Amino acid sequence: MKNLQELLKEITELTYKIEKDYPELYQFLGEDPLTIPSKEHPEINKKGMQDYLESLKQLLTHHIESHIKK
Image 1: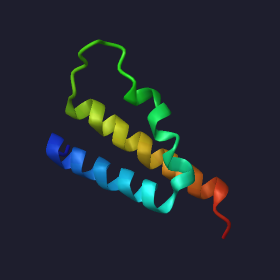
Image 2 (image 1 turned 180 degrees about the horizontal axis):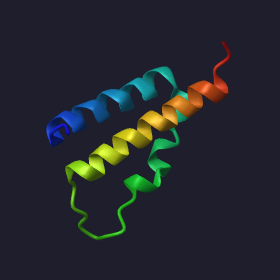
Image 3 (image 1 turned 90 degrees about the vertical axis):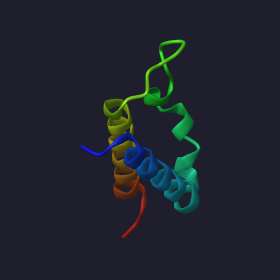
Image 4 (image 1 turned 45 degrees about the vertical axis):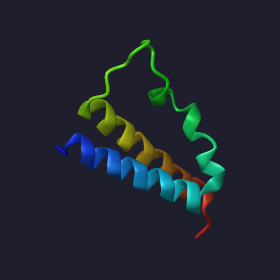
């Protein structure tokens, strides 16, 4: 498993790619339930960041498969 710094870097890069190349999708990132903490002071750990990264990848893959014409 990647360390937390590597995960954060990959999340940042993927988020930037979505913002730049898929602005219609970027607007929905703030609505992702994984980014809304249920605790007042949530713990940020590798598992949570790995899960969030995977959700971003799935969101982008689904968007490309269902909205981008080939």
